Length: 215
Image (tube, rainbow, N blue to C red; front, side, top):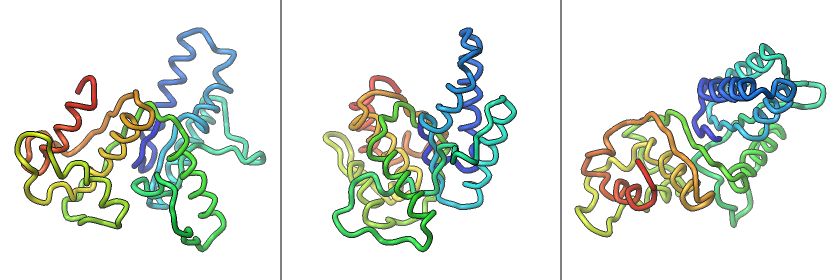
């Protein structure tokens, strides 16, 4: 499970709480501790680009696991699967040399996040992507994300600048991961609703109708 814009980790906390309840209701009390800790570090991931909410997300997840009786062990380097990274970049290997980061810790964070982006079979993408219609086209990799939505096979062509909104890029990240990489799964976002009927989004709507079994 991936929340690519996890903020302070509210959705991740709820996912782990749900896993905890499900395991206990299925009578697996003896295994809950290790299964829950493994889920928090190896199966439930969050990406956040801002340092302050990133730190709060780790605090919230750490407190949750502690309250559930499965605290993370600092001495052995255990950590929740939340990473400080730009969720909209790093999904494809870079042809050019990587730009070095000022601290070794930032390098480690980027490497760990890139491994998830490129190798983990994500089955669920959920979250609340940021809406910012004046964000512009962004860096080249981000701009390329919405290129698939700029044309249609039939029907009207996209009009206006709506595809530059940040939330559209997060939709494309989720669609690409579920449809093209894992080839199964669920996307569940709380989002701006302009894509449902706006004139900038017929290509977006067309792709989802063709790519997903249900909406």
